[in-house]
Image 1 (cartoon, rainbow, N blue to C red):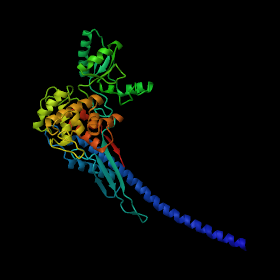
Image 2: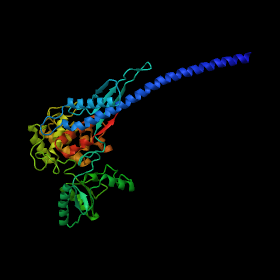
Image 3: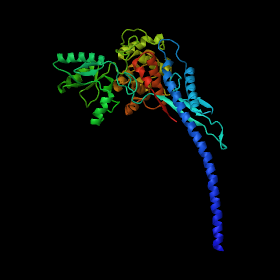
Image 4: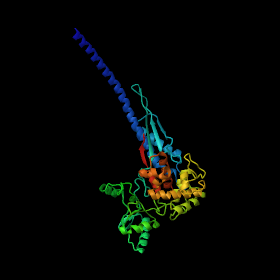
Length: 437
């Protein structure tokens, strides 16, 4: 009797478990349907955010025309991104409301957003459960390893090459080397070019064979890819080079490599002495005499003088001032940066500036600092990032740091440079599009 009763109770319990499992299966089916629907919606949101950011990347250079023509407005730029997002959501069979916004703090100095957020709402309910909205964010950013001359990406120089001792280099570097080699011969020293321009593919092979970054730079980071670097010999010439190379525009890059010299007078920008299509007064360029229209006329002579003195592109300096203060000589930032070039107090002291609100002094100090940063980093984007975020932060990674303010600052100036026909601005075409959420 007892055993039979226990078996009966067990049967009832088993029936209860089966019923519970059945009900659970129904619930799981409902939840699974909702999750699957949300997964489709999230994919649509992700693709829409990427499409909007890609539209922004393509439209960005049109925000800053160089010649006074009417460029794309920021409102039109935003509208193009919204349309791209909405098209992509509909193409992925999502019927919910699409909301496209541009997060605060993700804009360049001119107010053009570099980040976009897409929210795709659920169209209704599934099995009595409300459909969850999907949210995605994407951004434009300057590639971490960008080095400006010759375009975007890793910065490998793509222009014409000249050869000395069978080794390739930029043509302006070859002319400077010829002058230096002639002076060396007059002093009884015969120089030989051991290595010049090296593309990223060759650098990858060298690093694979000798993976020691002290002696062989990692692919995408070697300054040799810029066409400005020469390894020189023989060993008997090292003393003469150390004493005289600087007079010809060459800098010994590393204390432990007495043979490695980089040409620094035209570092990183096509508009200083070589290759510029449109040119700036006093910047060392050939064949032109006007600065881009975004530079007020009263500051053109100041920029020209600073460009001549420090051998830095006047277009680059002007684009930087536009981003720093919009040419307001009385500007003071929340961080304490002062004047038209937004010098920090420590820069004012280091550069010997007596009045940071005097445009001539401020721009001269800016040009001096940019000359030094271009020599150190061999790259316009990295020099700009160092001016904004500090050389220590840039030197630690040899990249444009992933700070929204610095990314926006560099992107804004590269956009202005590209619109002005300066080769450094071509790096804008290599801006990365990536999801951040």
